[in-house]
View 1 (cartoon, rainbow, N blue to C red):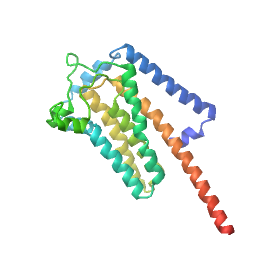
View 2: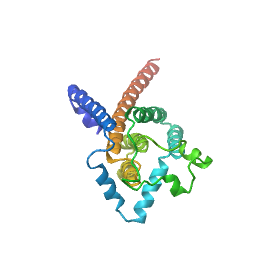
View 3: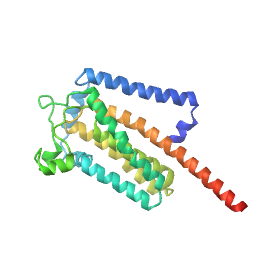
View 4: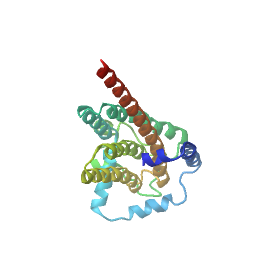
Length: 249
């Protein structure tokens, strides 16, 4: 994907980025003016009609994984693993993901879209599934917050898009074995998609909230990937220059 974008003329790439940014601005504005978009309610109701214990468990499990403490633990684990295996630059860029995550809080405050309510859909809280009482110490340790008041965008989906999207890029450019690469790529694609489905299925976000998260996360992801690629080329150039100087001596 990165190679396909790089193959585009510069003006085409700039236009694509500008269009993506404009789409996010427009979507955010309309989300601030409407509690939900056409089709949002029907999509949630359709998903909630799915009667499958496996599907329900998966949706809850992915939602719990996106809570503050589990997602932070996964992020730190990724950074530590990359650092240990000497992917230092990659570890630094993964560490930048929480900075991009801050856009979620900023947009939540700016857009201030009401969350889905019980009179429209079945709202299922992951804390209830875990058996953790809201406001209790275990709840605060896992989720770090009280009741949500703003719906757009979804922090879970935004974080999953950034973290697993960047790992997908790393796997695509670093893992050589075909079967291993395909298996990892498939898993890293499924996780953000499952996070989006889970937030809709549990009635905590609308479909349009999730779409907004994918757009925002995708734009930040492109910035991270391009920044990483540029830094890596610069480092490789510096290494080659140092090697040449060493040979001359």
